[in-house]
Image (cartoon, rainbow, N blue to C red; front, top):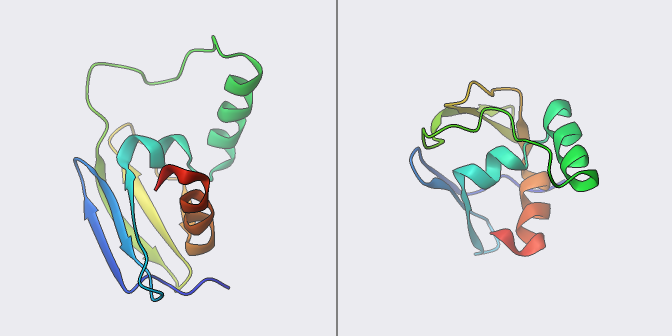
Length: 105
């Protein structure tokens, strides 16, 4: 099981910075976190976009996406609330480490 970060810094207009116990730090932009939400509806949308690159993203408007806040879920995850109304994504530390490994951190 992935250890929780030693420091969490949510910059609502920019992104989420995590400092890990092993000395690594990672930064995820807000729009990337929203796109990669582990919720079932977001996974389905990513699958649809992969199969049909012309699919329209829901909620695309001129307002910049921001984070409204975040809360810890036990000792294993963080839930982020987004300005587009999405609150279903629970990002486990393990999932965030896997995103980091994809070169987007």
